[in-house]
Each structure stands twice: as C-alpha cells, then as structure tokens.
Length: 399
Image 1 (tube, rainbow, N blue to C red):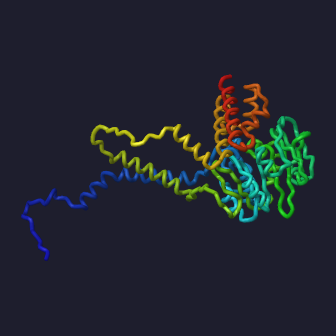
Image 2 (cartoon, rainbow, N blue to C red):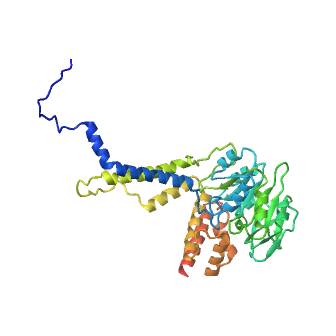
Image 3 (cartoon, helix red, strand yellow):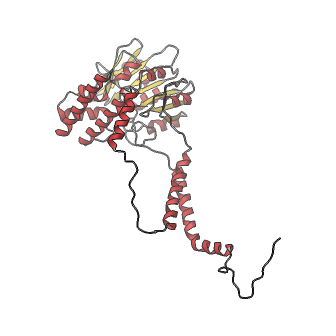
C-alpha cells in the first residue's frame, strides 16, 4: 500500500533538483564539446575510408613508390583484369579457384613442397626474380647468373611476350636455362632476362630475372611494360602473392602441417577503431581527475630482449626450420649492412651486393651466394654460413 507525504510550504527535499533538471544543466555545459568530438569522429572515418590504402613494400601493388608495382596493377585493371594481393599460398589458391594468373612477386623463403604445389596451377604462373634455390625447384635446368645491367637486349626467341616487348634495357640479373622445355629470351650471351617454360596441358610458366621489369620505376623503360602486361594479363583474374615471413601453406586444398593464420577484418573496422580510441583518449583527458602523486609499482615479470630472441631461436630449432631462421638472419644482416653503406633498406639485391663487394673487395658472386643462396642442408652448414655472414658484416662495419 503506497502513501503520499505532503511537504510543508517552503520545505525543500534534498537540493530541490530533479533528474531532468540535472541532465539538462549537464548537457548545456558539455554540448559544445560533444558536438566537436562528433564532428572529429565523422571527419576521421570519412578521410580514412576515402583514402586508398598504400604501402612501401617493394613489388606490392599498393606501393606507388619507385620499387612498387601499383602502376602495372592499375594498367591491368584499366584493361578489365582484376588484381588482388594475398600473403599466403592457401589464400591464393582460394582466390584463383582453378583459373587465372598467379604472380609470385615476393617471399622470404619457399620450401620445395610449396614450389611444387605452385607448379600444379593450370593457369599462367609468373615468377619475379626468384632466388637460386627456388629456380632449381622450378626446373633443375635453371640457375641464376650475374648480369652487367648495361646495354640493350633484343628479343631473340619466338615467345609472344618477348616478341611484343622487342627489347629490354638495364637488366641487372639473368637466368641460365638448360632445359628442354625452356624458351630463353633476351640473352646476353649466357643468361637470359626472361624464360618461358612450356607445359603440356597447362599455360606456360614465365620467369622474369629482374624485379625492375615490373616496378613502377622500370616499367617505362624499353619493352618492360609490354613484357609485364603480356605475361600477367592473359587471364581476367590475377592473384599477386606477397609471401609473409611465416607462410608455410601450400597452393592447394591440403594444408596439413600449416600453422600460418592471418585474421581477416573489414577495412572500415580499423578506421572505426582509430576514431574510437581517439575519442576515448579525449574523454579520459576531459573527465580524468588527479587524486594525488603517481605511484610507481615494479613489474611482476621483465622479459629481456635477449631472452625473447633465444626463445624464438629455440622454436626454429625445435621445428627444424633452418631455412626460415637463416632467412631472418640474412635479412637482418643485409639491412644493417645497407644502413652502414648509406643504402635504403629496400635497396635492390644487385645494388646491395655491388656496394658490399666494392667496400670489402670481395667477389660479388660469393657475397650474393652468402646473402641470397640456398638454405643449409644441416646444422653444420648452418653454423658455417652464420660464421661467414658475421665475418662479412664485421668487414663492412670495420672498413
């Protein structure tokens, strides 16, 4: 049973305010700040979604810089060819779905089983500047050869892409082809800038010796654009593979033993997260209250960088991943030596090898094999390669 109590005249209950009055007063005080924050949030989301994603990764189709491949991708799209970039072979297989062109543009290390799975693709396969170990896995008759990068090479074969290109200039690397199914083109007397491998019942495999042929900077030289478009633009769909460091998937449905996982999120989620984080920080600064001096508290656990490095090394050792481990060490050594020689981290392979050779007076072929050669066969070879790599880096830093 409810009961109503009437207050005497002039008596105030509490401070005499109501929830509506308090809410209205707070809104009047803070509405300008809420309005500004709302406008900033809308502006951030709009700008982020309207701006195309770009990167600085060499040979990425989202990289508009000299070392990127965005120009080639845009020309292909203008001709009605869809081009999309992936970072795992499993994702490339799903996107192609049995047809289209697979471009292997960049990777850290590919095992023989991964190269063999790529060869099962029935459509065009385009390899861009593969390393010596990968060339041998593609075809035992292929091997890498140094090139001067000077002069003009003419199309000395009947491959359609080479005939369309006519000539190439400034090719820095070449491929020696001794295979019955190989059609070498643009030969400098020993190696070739482009090799077409014929296959029974499938589209050919195209091997481009120099990454500059498809880069934004090199695409405008001589017949580079024609060669790049003829090799990549045969089908209506192109999948551009930019292999991640930990990708151990294969090009197929059987992914036994693969541990690489890449989460997929919608593109707008990142913009919304950034805007929400900025709003939260502004609100925290606005509503925050200092209750006194900050109190420091020691962390319960401190993990040193050296311990984290040793832990990662043990994981590589446990998984017998000598190739991945050596690839990471080679990449780190190359980056440090490039910095010591005033070269960018994205310096081409030929430029870095030439600079180190000139600095240390070592043979360029020896340096190239040390930095970009095949993976070790056993632990003894691994230790020997590491010792030689440390010796080379010491020479660069001492001189």
